[in-house]
Image (tube, rainbow, N blue to C red; front, side, top):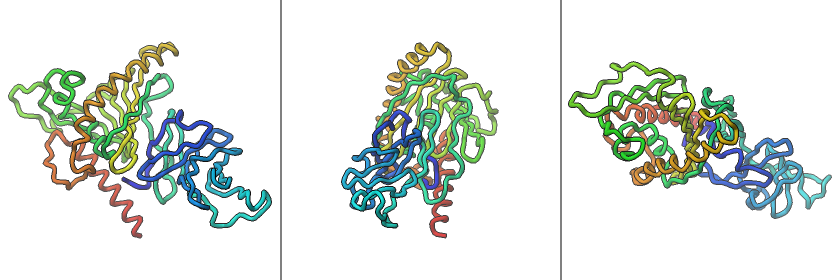
Length: 328
């Protein structure tokens, strides 16, 4: 996994008035809200005797260890050791390893790395509060990069989804066309068609479609949207649990029905279909070997795999960049 990145790790509704313990990015974290509602995160292990802080409670916005009542604020600073008294000394080493968080759009991001956060995380600028959405959390026994690549894969549609979104037998793939919008965002335009005996066109022979036409958008390290039209989107956050497990945080956005209660109801009613389509993918992705994808893993890629190739190149460059920082 790529360090020094903002990862979507939870939805806002998952963190309430009690500590929440989860495994993300191969580590155990505890999340909680302080008195202002701000979300905090830290390693889920008390520095005193190693108890899980997520089994504790919140006192005055501080996380309290269930074992000996020791309290820490959102920065990880120890603010109370009950055994030493409220005015007693606090050992300098009694410090909790806290991790920066960011909350917006009903999502919680975690900064996973050694350096300070590089600004705030990106989101899709064309998704705003005029949309209503439904959501679902779907566990996959796969590494998160494999799940991401599945959503960038334009070749599989008529085979894996032949009775749903891949209907029409459009097996021949022109391009596809990939555009880097900035250093962290790529667009993929799909040009699949029925095989009429002509050869697939190269990417350089294609012109970008209108920005309001169907296309895929991906923001590193783990956020994706299927831009269906100006009023309908499907969003996915590929939340890394560990090297063998990912949780697909899936959302359906719509604003064609703008009446508040009905708009939310329609978005929620669309979720079972979206989960069903995701399960068509999941059945295949969990069989892929090796579990962790990369540039040199013995796969023979095709022209139609260009979005995956671009993703792997960027991911490899980010991994190398962060490894060099660690060494230096």
